[in-house]
Length: 87
Image (cartoon, rainbow, N blue to C red):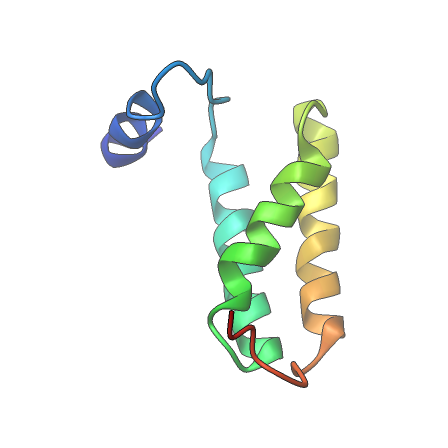
């Protein structure tokens, strides 16, 4: 789908990463933006996208797209974060 993403996927060693199409990529970026805006902290963006990836793993494309749309809505509905994730 994208040369950088292809190189990144190739760097994941023996893992067999799934392919990502433009529709999925757009929804994942939308989710990251919604999580960052809603929570008020950018650190929630990668975590929200990782969780969504875990939920969608193994699903067919149409189901993944539907789940990603729902994740975007959930990120917006979650509202502001009460605290950061200082670890």
